Image (cartoon, rainbow, N blue to C red; front, side, top):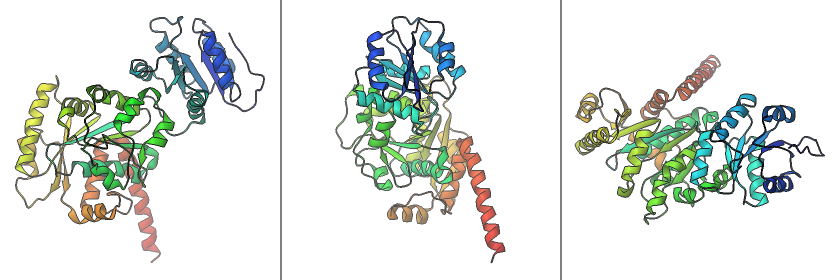
Amino acid sequence: MNAPPSDTGNRPHALLISSDSAFLNRALDVLGPHMRVAFVSAAENGLEAVAQSTDPDLFIIDIDDVDWQVTARLTTVERIRALFPDAPIAFTSSDISTNTLIPAMRAGANDVIDKNASADEILAVTDQLTSRRPTRHSAGNGRVVATMGLRAGVGTTTLSLALAQAILETDRSLGPVLYLDFSAAPSEAADLLGVEPNYTMFDAVNDLGRLDGSVVESAFTRSANGLYMLPFALDEAAPNLHEVNEIPNLIYVLQNYFRYIFVGPNRHAFLRSVFDRLFCDSDVSILCTDQSVTSIHACSDFLRNIRQFVAKEPEILLAITRYDPRISPDADRIAHTIGIGQDYQIIPWDRQHVDSHRNAGLPLIHPNARSPFADSTRQFMARIDEDFAAAHRKSRKGRQKWRRLLRLNR
């Protein structure tokens, strides 16, 4: 079945793959005034021919369709991607929940449309997808960088925020970047960023079925230098267990909107098992300690427990924060005691830079930041991400060129 529009102007073109006549009629009523709409049945074999003849800007796949075979959703996405690698794909269903949302994202959908949503809500999703707003990128590509400190005061929040800020100050095209703050309220990260969030992870969990780019842009807090931030909670009230267990699914969905997600330290006993698993499953896992014996022993105990908790050797990087070479133990001894080998990064004690920037409300890492802390943070970020390393090298060459020109003009 194919329904070409009467107006073939420059409006975007949507191809709906469905056999639900009621849904198709409503879609035509809602989308017809705003875009060109064509239909094809899920049972038809001519999907490629219809798609090539209509050249859609958006594919909408009805996952409630009774004509679907067991693996048809995934194979249909693969067929579309082969012909139209850049075209966005939305799944639509009358039952939007984590049971449908997560499999849809894993199958490669860019978004999900609730059949029961209002016309304005449906148009908001299709408008976002067809306008190519930079709030969405390839499904599931966002990298998760988790930091954990076992004792308060070792600088875990400071380091995590600084790594996120290093990306934004080096090349904003590497973004967008999100900081998930798992610390107890009131949020230290919010204070350092100079923001007052009113939307939390648990708000996002409850909105999971309708979480899209418009919610991210309107509800997520954003700092002056462009870092998105989402706190765990705004008060000490503990959420229910269901909300806690949905956090990994929330992060999976957010990976579709953010290039990097930095996960801050956990200070909640009831979150320990979820956070430990999240820490181990992240793309980059950073364990933070200073030179204090209590922190070193806590990290050693944690790593020993984690090795029992997961079936394989965890890939964890050690960050020795607030390091002063004049104080014992030295970095090699710390790494040996914790049991992590020699794979560590020293973040030097640089109180003048860190405290002056924190107290003035300035980003810890910015283009003019030249200090032992800033330099070591950039080096650390270059170690853990190849895209950042390439952008950092390019940025350094550019600054060196301008310095040479300035010297010649003196």
